[in-house]
Length: 499
Image (cartoon, rainbow, N blue to C red; front, side, top):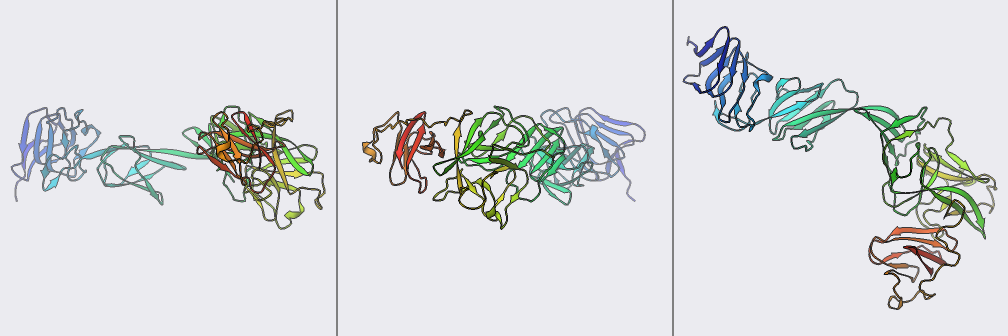
């Protein structure tokens, strides 16, 4: 039997090396044995095997190295073993038993090439797969391109985030409670945000992550469920997802109040009355700067998104009215999908029109037809007095913007004709006014102005027909088959056209 050769043998005590060179690789059986501890503090050491110790490896210089062909299984390398020089160029290799660590490719040992290993810092409750070298509860090492698998314990609704040392996101996949990612050539950190669900009914969800509460409103929700807030909930932020079209009016109701300056994306208008004149029905609405909870509004967006900034309080809606009325009409908001069935023709309800027809402009209220449905956070009008049958009720109701005194806005008593009545004329004959030209021809309104110019179009009674922003230096607007006098308002100037 071949005798084991020990280059260093310490039965009771610590083997310490502070510098110099130690080479004990003359035989595969040449070993260092330290019953207590191997404390390598610097220098260069090469040995066939190390066993029976807790290895403490501390590199103090860039030329330090600790290389051996193999560690026996009873060698333990703990967190004290992992101190490197600031520039990180020194190397440690552990080939068997406990794994391997290296900061750069430096040599081949027993036919194996040293590979860089990178640190994985984990949050509490994370356990990594066996292909990662565990230093302690919160630190692991492995090499680039290794598929790292891990599991979580102690979390209710975890959201896992893996970041590399450059703060870049590392893609993580999850299946049946196991998470995996491919190790990059950088140190990484695995963190977990525990999402606590405070409320989740219908189109409204409230979550809490690290003490921060967020209300999530799904404006596209089409399910049958509504929500009932039995008590107020204060949240730090609101996420509202719903598509809008700039200048195309819609309706909205919110379960919280928002102050002036706390929202972006459009303007709110409150309805004041519905009236009829010469056979035309008009709903008047005036602008407000602050918004009340559980109150239906007309909303005119100036972009495609509506955003709320800052904290709000979701107010309980159990047994709370979501409508208000004048003498004859009621404006109602819904938090649950409302559907009209086959008997919808026998009702007095009106919803906002989304698409134009020959007689209806988007933003008009139209009488509800059969099998129509209204999604949550939207509103409808109901007549309280007139008969359901006959010609008493109109098929559509225009919307007119007024101020709080019911005076029509942007509808002067004697609109100014900037082109002295010369309308439907060729472009070459139109005199420029303040770098803006407006004319009509063949059921088309032409606006020649700088791209990004805001415009509004109303009829002679002040009813809104179109609102928008020019996309080019010459835009064309069509209003369907509507005819008569229209007024285009740009930069405070009015242009009266025969459409």
